[in-house]
Length: 502
Image 1 (tube, rainbow, N blue to C red):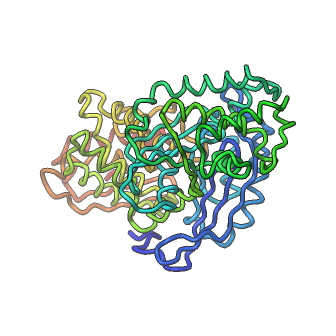
Image 2: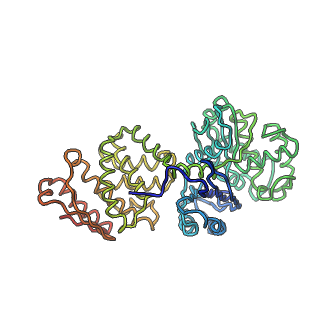
Image 3: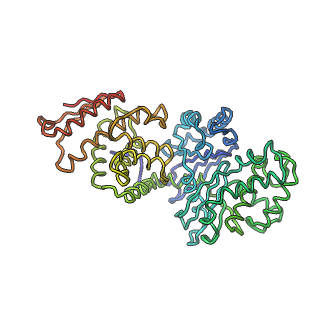
């Protein structure tokens, strides 16, 4: 089977990344030159998706703001091949129960799916973006990204993150919760500072200054603070605590957020600057930070570098799956058997069932991880496998990919009920049911193939059907497999797929 990946990306290749943040949407298009990326186009719009999030529900107005922005971004993406575009959604979309009201039409606009990523995956990508902008030295560093809805903390060395955390505190969310109606007062500011200290309490020891040598900030808010301190002479370079106090006092002289008028402060930063100062001040005090420099690298650059890895067979998801197999002592021989058998069924059905290379990757990872639940208990091991795949921190995987892997693990055996597909987008359910069909059939043969070589059997697929034809007498000689295949006919029928066996 062939795919579109190559060992190297030729010079001149274009890649694109979209960061759909809680405050702003960012688009970067980069050209590959000598194995590195050079930005050629960059757009940013203040969408404030997070401001439209209330009780886990995105407002229609916020959704429309986001889709309108993507409509403008899409004009620049015509020059980039779809498989070389990646869009990631962060905290606002993570928290929104109705996120598909945004992600489904967004996918139609952009021609690529929206990967909503978990907080620690966001932290990993932020670190990757920052690390590529810094000197390749051996110093350990703390990287901080203050976004609209969350703050990411990472300790790492060179290109490898070592500790990752994502906290529920951000400039947009704090602006709404701590500064009601945009009113500025010392009491409101103190509330924001104390709330940030409270969020930091569980992790302050793990990220304290004793564990790193250099501190780097990566977000637009931190770069804005850095620029203000330097421009007004409150700091020689970078951000320090004394400069933050002077900026804090200056901002507290205003009565409302809308009335903030400070030379060097862009209009689109006005509503997040004071919550940002409160959060970074709390970070300085809780973690023992004395000085922070800022970096132009951020999540979107990290997405580009991660995409470069995916397209050159250096996919971090492969390392994640291998680590899972080791951690849960997976039988590698059995996993390989299931992968080989799944590949046979995938190849036979790919055209009729309109499956893609991404579907094969999902099946292959499912084959390698389907038995991880055995390390917890043999009984209902598929449920344990599904729980781990859905809830563990899996570097490189989006929330949707983890949900789909969990469904494949859960549905590998036993009954297939509609509730198992509750987390799958409605439009993706037929495709997922076909992948379930493939993984279940692959399971039917894993024990047989350990004992003997399987005979060649014919496969014939239609849009909603699959026919298996075995050599004469083989099924009679293998009554257990014949019984399992008969049971699969009933399971397939529940998914409106016809399985014929002869």
